[in-house]
Image (cartoon, rainbow, N blue to C red; front, top):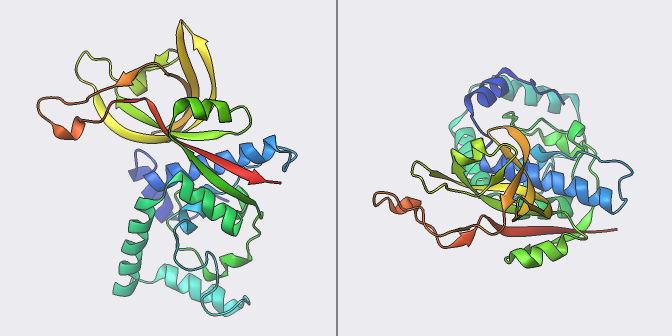
Length: 270
């Protein structure tokens, strides 16, 4: 669907330097589904699925997309939706929006995958664009969804994730430091440089693309979307991050760990 469906969407996207955590998780989950289904020959060609659908429906209490008043679509339904779109928000609607923001803040890649396995997922062109701020209409239940079955496996150890990569695309989280992440280019991302000035940005959802040797180091090729730009970088598998403490700032302190953590594997059934 259009990337400019509503002026509110344009303003919202322009105001954000980076996708929020729910959008990043949903994007990785949708890409994992696309890659896995293609590997299993469930899709004859690489098919893009809707990340925004996962943002709208993961961790949703009621059944995603179900009309609250009927299973039939009427002209009145459409008119009611258009009127609500143009009307000022009521207190009840503002409270519901706040509730949805709290839900979004909790969404993980695992939540998105489980949502797709439970409810199916529409192709990208059959749902709103990523970052759409328009409320999901009740008649969205009529949009076609691709059914799928599967389960999600969480893996803690890198070596176990590497073994599973032979048969399954895998997601993970990358410890992101600035300015190193912006400067990696064609080199190897090794986290903080140790020269001072490094800032821990946080964890970012990524997709693993395969391990290799590069310039004497064991590295993982990783797909990451950072500041709305998707790129492939090489991440060191040997570098351990021990502390981010700087001038007594405890928020910059973490447990010793590798740069890639929290691996997630979608096991899709044929």
